[in-house]
Length: 159
Image 1 (tube, helix red, strand yellow):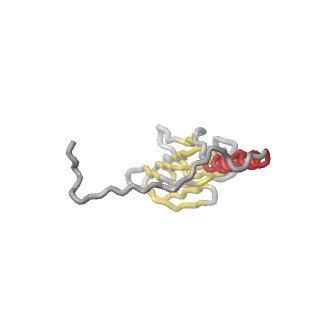
Image 2 (cartoon, rainbow, N blue to C red):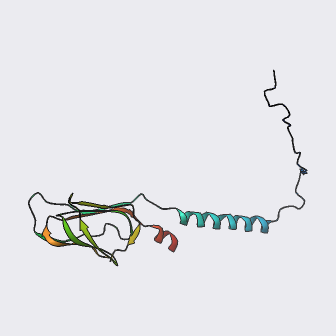
């Protein structure tokens, strides 16, 4: 078979100077094995706290009605007993100014002419006691939807 490399190309192979031993220099002690397992268990525990459990979906909503409403405040109730991580907010209603109150956040917003406002992607936490309100500037057929997942990591960290 013909060599297809460019003329003058050289192959260099570095042989590592590694000495392989057939057995350990010192026998393993029980203390060393126990300490190693404790370190591994702590590393796994730390990694588990970094994971997010998204299996408990949050979908809180108050939909528009078929008949024209004359409401100016829409309030939602939390779904879970733990904090919730909200990843998107959908608001619908008549075009004009309104206020969105989510926990300590108070956002003065303007509903576009399409009568739907999507705020995503976001990520913030709402506890069970936090407000979830849309306050319309004028009475109308308002709706609010919060999507995300329940934050069960707090209960994992407590253990």
